[in-house]
Length: 137
Length: 436
Image 1: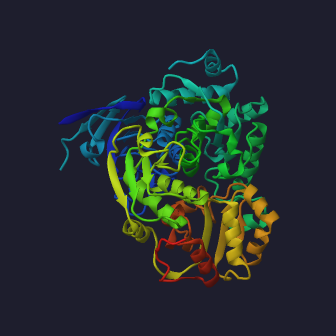
Image 2: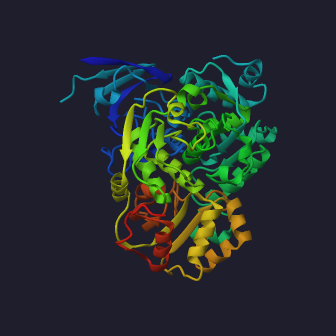
Image 3: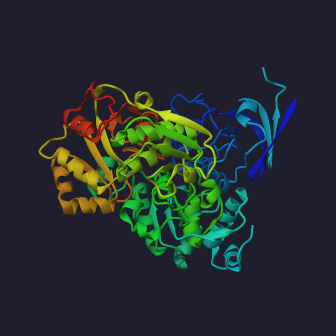
């Protein structure tokens, strides 16, 4: 079964892949090694996992204004997420997604943190986010 | 999005490649927020961030071309670096920092770019302390980087900026910014009511309050009641902490900050989404979350955000006639302009005599810490640790474990931190008690 969430394309684009859902606000500065995309935030649910090649889902970005640069560096190192889905978009992360050309969606009709589970296959197309749920355990 | 003929010309590349890319980026940003037009800004505080240039709108070639063709910023602009972590014109500091050659080169390069483009090289996260804030009267549209400065400019000075990063550099180059976010009245009203049922008098309480509230409100605007006479340093600390655990852009304090003469005005006549009561027990719990209670101390770092001159004075008085323990490092981080001031006033000499190190020169950021940055920075190297770490800044305590790989983190008053620097110990009795 597939669920389609409708939102606003902050950065236009198409991408599809496996989702990684951070239930807490995300910081690239606090929490990502930009050499390999691995989450290093202490106590993060997915500490040790990589954001590289994932559809990264989180409520919003938090913390340093340098987060934009860190996301950009992830992209320059080819370890960035392929798309970003936010509940609400923080301006710093929007700027990172623009410079790194990463499709980004927010303001969806349902909360993406509730609707998407880590491991789901997710397609982002403009403001539409399609979540494949048939393989959920 | 409507563009004026002048903006269209910039977008068409008539002022060169960098201005074109800058305008392109700002238009994209405007489209992200459904902005209708651009507005003129009166000030920008930017990152040059040359170590990040790569794919995308900012390439080394574009910058080189802009420098060669004499592109200047269109509004008064200041800058800081992001992501260097260790810079100074003092060679011995470079050695202590173990700074690699490419980092030193970056400092020289960025200073040259700043000079060429008419950006004032402030090298600090607290430009509002060292530049003439008379430039930005209430309601001025500006664009600034530095999460703590963003909150301070918006909340305390009443200027208007979003949480910006690259957009600030592009805004400086064009003098423009899309009319969206916190530039609009309707987005500046309070959302959460934070009611303090305790007296906050000490700076650390403001930091803990910021961490606690930032976690709850996320990127929404909190309105505080129950705060009466904050000092500049208290508001810096609050600003920094709100944008660490959260992504706060703006706060109001009823009866104190410029957009909150009264409760109704602060909320734009709307009802708060939620009222949150804060007492000493919430702040004590926050303290226990970020701070360890006792143990030896290897490293003491003060000045996050960069210390004001009054804090420099206070530290010099606390250190007068004392001696920092040989096996402990004490850094006091401040803007180069404040460091000069401290030198003139004699504070620097007292601090240095006691064995404290003033870290300034271009943009020392205490969040990055010393040592072996390699391809990236300290925190990217899992085998590096700063040891046990003490600070008087809630923001820094919050970042110390992941970024500096601190074994233990101690948060305390400036007095407690200086004591730790001279004894090498964090006393179990330090804890949290809201006294100045």
